[in-house]
Image (cartoon, rainbow, N blue to C red):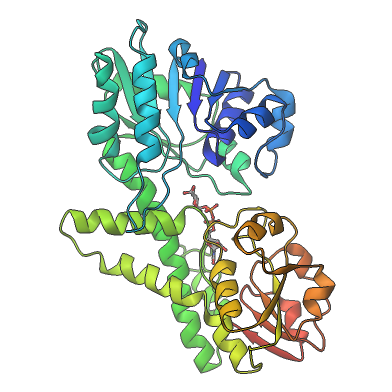
Length: 415
Ligand code: UGA
C-alpha cells in the first residue's frame, strides 16, 4: 500500500519504518528540516532500539511537501499532542496537519483512509478531524474513510512493540474504513478489536491512566511500607501471584515520567471535568506522582545539609533505554536541589545532551565523579548502575538498585 505519515516523532517514525519493513511504500511528512534530512540519509533522528537497522534495510522517504499525500491509500496522523498550561491536550498540530491534508486531497478521486494515530482525547476525531477533512468538499464515509488506531509503543522497545503488538485497536467510522486499515495489519499476529472512533480514543488514554494508577498505587503502598520497615518489592512479588493483579508496573520508586503517562492523565482529567465529572482517582494518581518525585530530596535532608553540598544524579532519562528527558523525575529533583543551594553533578549514558538544554548550569560528569559527591541520588535504573561500588557513599535510591544497599548510608524511596 502507499502510505503517508504526517509527523515523524517516535510514533510516526517507528510506524513508518515498520510499515515499510512489512512491504509498504511509506513517505514521512514533517516540518522539521533536520529530521527530514536525517531520515533521508537513513539516520534515525531519535534514539530507539532497532530503528537504525530497519532504516538501513528499507527505503523511507521524508519530505516537508504535503503534495505527496495525493497518491496515498492511507494517511496517518502522527503529530504530537503536547500538554497545554491547564493540563488539556494541545490539538494545534493535529488541526494544522489535518487542514493541510484537506487541502491536498481536494482533487483526489480514489478512495483513501485517514487514520488518527496521535493520542487524542475522546471525541477529537469526530468533532475536529472529520469536519476539517470535509472542508475538501468530500464526504467522510463516502469519498474517504476515517479510523482512529491508537499506538501502544513503549519508548526504548517501540520497534519490538510495533512488530509484536499485544492488541490492534481499530476505531472505525464505517466498515470500509476499518477493512482497509485491517488489511494493512494482516501480517501482524495480534488480537484485533474493532470499535467506534471515540471508544478507540478512550481505550488509549484509559490504558495509560491505568498504568499510571498501578505506579502511584504501589508508590503509596511503598510510602506506608517504608514507615513500617517492610520491603515493598517483596510485597509486590507476593501480590503478583494473583493473576488479576499481575507483576508488571508495580516497581515502586520515584514515579512515572515521560511524554505520555503524565500528559494523557492530565488530558483525561480536564476532559472529564469538561463533561461535568470530577475524576477523583485520576487526580489523586497525578498528585501522588508529583509528590513522589521529591521523596529523594526529603530523604537526603535526613543525612546531608543540602546547601553547599555536592549532590550527584545517577540517571537523567525518564527511564532506561532512551535519551528522552520529557517529564523526567530528574527535572523536578534538579530544580529543587539547585534552588536549595546544592552543587549538582549528573551522569546519564544517553540523556545528558537533552538534559543540558534544560539545565546548562549543572556539571555533566563521569560516573566516578558522581560517586565522589557528598551524596548520590539514583534517578534512572540503567544497567550500568547495577554493578557500581557504592561502599562508603551516601545513596538515596529512587529506583531500587540492590547493590546500592552496600552504601555507608542507604535510603530506598519506598523500602
Ligand atoms: C507508555 C506506555 O507504557 C505505553 O504503553 C504507551 O504506548 C506509551 O506510554 C504512549 O502512550 O506512547 P512510555 O512513556 O514509553 O510508555 O514509558 P513506560 O515504560 O510506561 O514508563 C513510564 C514511566 O513510568 C517511567 O518513568 C518509568 O520509570 C515509570 N515506571 C514504570 C515506574 O515508576 N514503575 C513501574 O513499575 C513502571
